[in-house]
Length: 320
Ligand SMILES: Nc1ncnc2c1ncn2[C@@H]1O[C@H](COP(=O)(O)OP(=O)(O)OP(=O)(O)O)[C@@H](O)[C@H]1O
Image 1: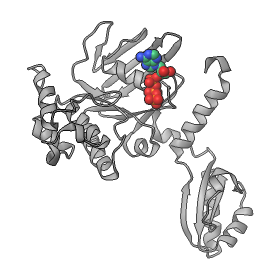
Image 2: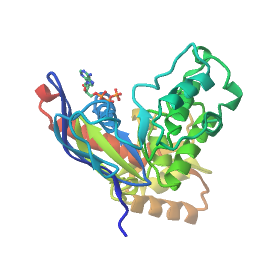
Image 3: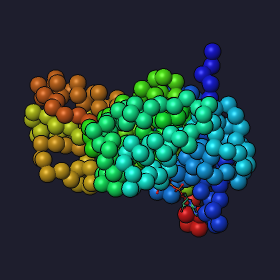
Image 4: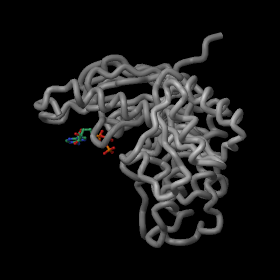
């Protein structure tokens, strides 16, 4: 049986005065996915998330959420929760009081999570009775997530949920989102952090200037045919350099952002995957131990930069 589609948008256009925030955007998100929205500042991510939350309506196009078409003047879609532009919280109330306020606003027929359970899920039990005024950005983000979890959403929409989270907080929040998705909920989130998106999302939509430049599985972006820059650290840097220089398809990068490293035992090379495989085989044959080999930027980030840069170069100046 085909997995149901949680979000289906066709030709979505949203204009603010002279600014086309979304320009005929098509997007399909299957149920149970964690779907990432990524794009440069002003690309239209928050605008699209706002439409999913029913905070605004599109000027053109159709949007279907959890199987129901979203029309002009529709209420916020059932089963959807989340936030854009930071969670709306009352600073003079405690975390528990904030959630209690949200809980009483939930319609009676909506299945809810208890306030204590929501606080526990985001790791805020110990801070439950502290006023939100004294909360750090990361704690506010977690409380915003707890508020969104109260109604047991089938579609959770989050604008930069990892903002301000320390590594432990991030791991905790990622765990909550993965569990939700495993239980069948759909999560759509925006982020500027490619490492977060790669860790969490099975699919991403890349937006640039309001247009979709890619939408699909993250692994499709890890194109083996794309040249990437790799850091190579080995037991014998001079010998590595000599082997790299003699390996077809390997370009040693001297200078530039990627290569300007203070640790001189690292060399940076530009190559496709097949050439890197050959380089490693040759190094091992020469008894050189490979201590580190990693792309300077991740495949997703490289694809993002290539796709958004390509669009910027093909757009006339007046369009930007
Ligand atoms: N309410 C509004 N009134 C006027 N212009 C707006 C409004 N909301 C968004 N815009 C414009 O629409 C475009 C898209 O904005 P949006 O906030 O969706 O981008 P974004 O991808 O979320 O950016 P960022 O990464 O900076 O958060 C921008 O040019 C922005 O200035």
